Amino acid sequence: MFFGRKPAPVSWIIVFLGNPGPRYDNTRHNAGFMAADAIEKKTGTKINKIKFNALTATVTLGGAKALAMKPQTFMNLSGGAVRQAMRYWKVPLSNVISISDDVSLPVGKIRVRRSGSAGGHNGLKDIIDKCGGEGFPRIKIGVGAPPHSEYEMVDWVLAKLSSEEAKLIGAAAESAAACVELMLSQDIDAAMAEYN
Image (cartoon, rainbow, N blue to C red; front, side):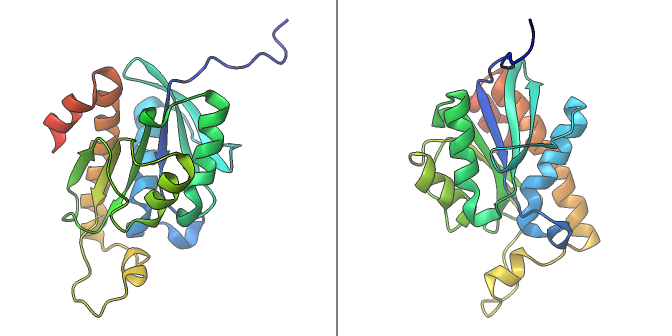
């Protein structure tokens, strides 16, 4: 009988960081969710199954099976959703790839890191705090820094993108999706050499 059978296991988790709801669509902080849209397009799947306090889908990318997830807990609490998925699928932290916005990178630039600190990003900080440390690869999508120092960071990252910024970040999101595929088909070194 096929009833109750667990689906084939995944060996990777790809976590796209953002905030749920239409209020946050097309904002800098949702660059990770834009990369999720690019993965959907690339794999022909919809990340829409509710599990682990996230929208999820099992995707095959670069010859590997991965859980694609968009936590619905708001950015600052993303780690709880990731921890649940890691425990369920028994995926080590080294096989969790995060994709998020980064204010220290120019708009539309991407950077791949093997591991590292949160760098002031609260979504990454929560994953580090709840999932066992900094040892997970990440892809950062540049959204640029506020134009002057008096600008509140929260206002900057939650502001709507201009049409030019949306175009650049949309292209970077597609590059991030291609980068994930390269990481899964080869390794992180190949992705760093290609995209950094």
